[in-house]
Image (tube, one colour):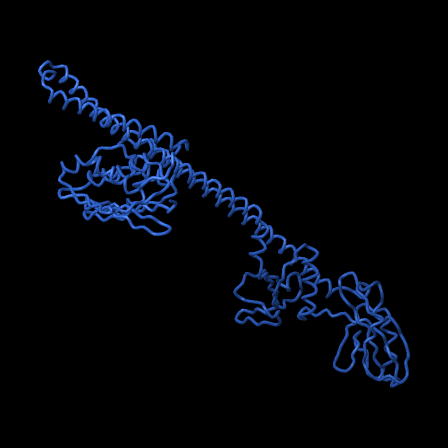
Length: 496
């Protein structure tokens, strides 16, 4: 089966649009993946640096701290028998470690195997050249105080770990909030040694084995996680993502309006062809009738028969009027489309205009044995263009007659108020489907029965009615039900 050009173009446009969106989605997904991998690589490099920091703390000698020996001062102070810190001696070394100066009494310390013990605390002396100078203190009860620098090298300390991790992350440009936990993992058990308050096991974690490159295995593992990692990666591609979304919306909008324009053009093309066919029929009928009447008049027998001659002359005039009316209607539509229609408004009697419209259809009313009820005799003056308003009521009455079956009844009723003058034209005809009511005022639109119009016409009548009433500042409404009939309600502003 041959595919229609419009359908083929829409299919190709839809396929291209879908392919473009899929390619763009795939590209954004890959870009997000690349950013995530770059973030992971930075974190892995950072945790390796954290591991080295922790290992260096354990193996560093006393000269690693500001270039000083462990024993900074050797002082003798009387009347002192307790442990206290000396803040005046605190400093930060190049590893970011904060040594603490402590003053302890000689009676509280002893030196064994290069370790200083005081009470329950033990401070290891690493490569301390002056350690031998401390041994003579052993057993001496004199209140001799020492000021020494103590460095916390315990990898299980929460604050220590937090300070090291934060320092490394900042140096690597990772300013995200993080959580961590230190766990001891054996073959059968997992024990949490320490962790931050908001650490969650279900979140993605980066793992660091603290036993790596050590002679003895501690089975301690450091787990680090970033709660806002996903949001951070998305924010890093935010600009590209927004541009992609805007570009997609622009493409989709162009696609939508292109398809809509094509469908509208297709519809207009069909309407145009329908209009040409209807116009041809409407024009050919009076032309053919005029031709027949002309031939009849030229017949000598008709010429000599005054009654028949008058009859055919009347036919010529009527058909000429119809032909002229069709041409005028088409020309008026052109003026309305251009916005060049000029109304000649003046005070006119609305009642009289309606009566003239009814009278102009008297012959058709009698032929169809229809009945028109209009009993309003009150004079109502409004600023109107008489010719165009007369044409409006002619169209409504003509439609009521054309789209009615036998026993056609047309009721015309006027309801007057200080602000609005309402005119109702109601019939008992075939009615209109509810879903078509919004379309009947469109140009060239005609209610169809299958592919054949039951009644010929241009499809311009109701469009003309709507346009003329809008130009007068009036509104028109329609109520209709299939097989029951239709009612057109015109509301004029009372400007008389």
